[in-house]
Length: 469
Image (tube, rainbow, N blue to C red; front, top):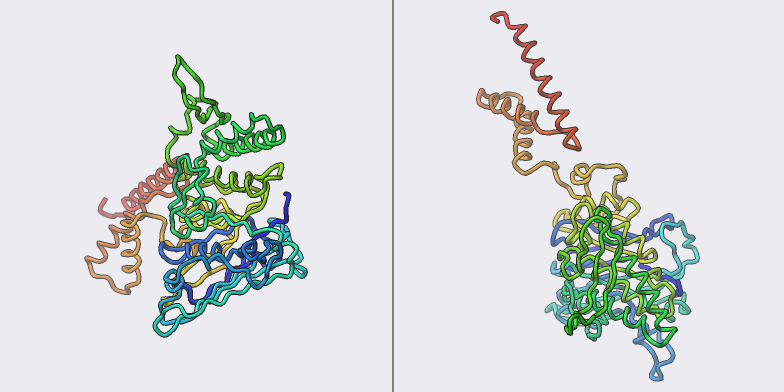
C-alpha cells in the first residue's frame, strides 16, 4: 500500500429512523478488525439506514481548507451528510416524538485485518452530527463535530468510502460523467450507477499503447491486474481461462468495434455484452471498485491492494448459490485491504463468512435492536443457520410442512384427545415420519430405504403379536 489504511471502527446512532439507539463495533474487544461485517435482518428493518449512516459520516477534510487552499481548518470539517437537504434530515429523526437524533462514527488508521492490535495508542478521528428539530418537527439546528488525535494522517487524505446501493445498475459509456465522481449522491438516492466495465477496459488498453512510457506502463500494469482479477471473480465451476480485450478492426472495409471476451477452458467463448445480467453486474461491481482505487491512488504499483471502505447493500444480489459460497473469498482475495460492510439475505453468504463480524437487527417491543453477540456457526448446515438467530425461521421446510408440524405440536400438548384428534395425529405422524432426511439425494434415498424397512418390521411384529392372524 502507498498510504496509511483507514477503516471504520465504530458507529453509534440514536433516534435515527427505526432505531432508538444502536452501537456497532467493527473492531472486536481483542483488537481484531475483521475484513467483513455482515448486517442481517428482515426487509425494512433498518439495514440500509446503517450503511447510509456510515457513508454520511465521512469527514470532508479537503473541503475545509483555508481561503488560500493550503491549511486544513479543523473546526470547518463537516460530515458528508451536511450536503443533504433539510427534508432529508428531518425524515431521519425517529418519528416516535423525538426531537433530537445523533450519528457518531469513529475511524481508525493503521490496522491490519484479522490481526490482534494494540488499541492503547490508536490513531483515530471522529465525525458526529446532531439533528435538532423544533416542536413542529422542522429542522432547528444541526451541530457537527470533528476531532482527531492524528492530524498528520487524517488531514493528509480523505477517508475513502465507496458505497453501492441494492439498486446498483450497469452504466453505459459513462466513464467521464461528472455525477459519478461522487458515489454518495447516487447511493443515498438509491440509484447506484456502475461505471461501464467495457469502457474502462478499452480505455486502459488504449492508454497502455500510448507514447508516454510512464503512463503506458502504469495503465498496462492496471489492465493486466484487473483482467486477472475479473477472471478470478467469476464462479470457479465456469473454468474461465482468461478475459481478453480485442481492439476495433476493419474487416471487408467495415469497422468492427472492439469487445471484451471471456475465454472458457471447456466451452465456446462469450463476449461480455452477451453475458447474463447477474454475471455483468458482479463483474461491473468489481471493475467499478478497481477503477475508483486506480484513480484514488495514481502512484500505486498495485491499486487493487490499496485500502478503502466498501459499503455493499445486498452482496448476494444476482448470485447463484454456488457463487454465493465463493463471492466473499473472491472479493477478499482480490481486494485484500478493503473493508467490506455488507447486508445479505442468504444463509450461504453467512456460512462462507466465518471470520466476519455479524450484526443482527431484530424488532423487540416495537424497537429495533442490534445483536452483536452471535453464535459460532463454524460447521453448521444451511438449515441450521436458517433456524438460528441469524434468520429466525422456525423450520427449514416449506410453509405447508411447517403448518403440519405446528398442528402436530399443538395436538401433542393436549392431555386428552378426541377420537377425531387421535386419527388426525396418526395421519400427521405418518406424514412427518415420511419426510425426507439427509443432506444429499443419496442420503435421502438411504434414509427412505431404512424407514421403509423399519415400517415392514413393525408390520411383521404387529402381525406376529395379533392373536387373530
